[in-house]
Length: 235
Image (cartoon, rainbow, N blue to C red; front, side, top):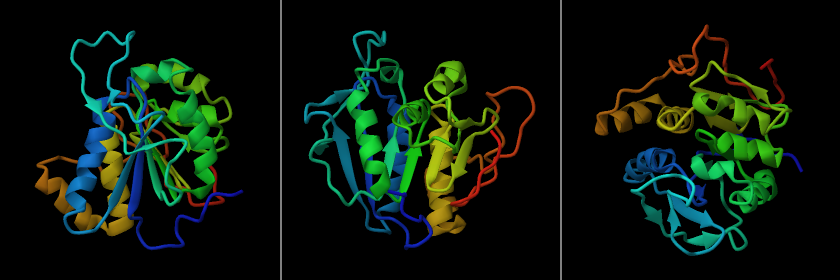
């Protein structure tokens, strides 16, 4: 079943974030805080998904963290709402363990045909790539985990020199803080640049508005133009 046409509706209002043990905190909380502020003027809803309803920690036994935070899910993957329009998929140390993200991979594969948009941050794109939903699409990931990330999706057109990449209804960002720039760009795409600028000003955040400016990639930049449904470029 093909993914819904992202240009056929008004801006989305129903968001979800897919969590797993060892998710990167800023991958989640950076983009979500933008939605928090946006929801003061535009009603939104948010579902927090995980394999169980137990609190989900930002650390795992193997991650090496001595400080962590935990988030309480609202739904399990097995009982997730069927009206999710936008799914946010973070990265983090927990993505390296296949068993740790097995249910996430399965959920993304099953849910993607119903989504209007899939947004990934950092190595969240590697998890999405494992599910197969990025095959044939342009995508990027964390540059410090680049070789591992691209190995998870050999049929993805990976773009190294990109802060974020948009291809149809998939948005993928580079590492950690890049998810904030991507989310502001997503807000600008859906609600307008004036809204995105006002939200960034409210947070005293200096945006990177050029997806091709990626200071952590090294070398020369290449094109990362937004691709609409049915268009493809070379990775």
